Length: 250
Image (cartoon, one colour):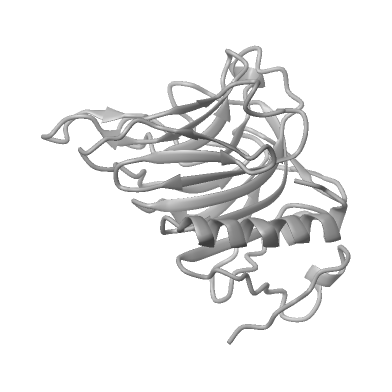
């Protein structure tokens, strides 16, 4: 049994064992509170799981951290799983005018066979989620298998709780703040995870160099597709934590 911590302020998560017991632990690989300091941000609050490291100098603020693609980000040791669930509290104040101003919130995306997963802003002003899959029965061609969140689906400049679930055949992204979702196209040819571990606030160098900035307050990763009940229970806990810690309502 893990140690439960009820966080009422920003100091609570820096005390004791510095671990958090979440209501759903199936496949739980990482919990990151991205606020206050780099020392806190790289700490993995999931029981028994390894910490991350920092690259560059992310901007530290009380309630969130500002990352810049390929320059200032958190490098995790978390491998991308074939099925997965990702929770993040995030926003971007960047323009999304071009690749220099398109952020990546989290990702394993690179080039070649490492298309992996990525939540990012594109130069059309939208937020996209990719989760690479094979697009033929011989598994020789890889598709990014993307979902697009239009401006009507997400207020990019306000903090939102965005959740992505990835099954063997389908990717779905939920804006829990708005109570909406976008469902990808069913694909029966199989998933193609990246061989690279997740980055928070960046992807990897590739054909498209995403160098924009984003603000993130929280990131949690499960190496399984959570059920709707498990997802809802986790969302409720994250909302409680964000409000108690930073007064952020998502």
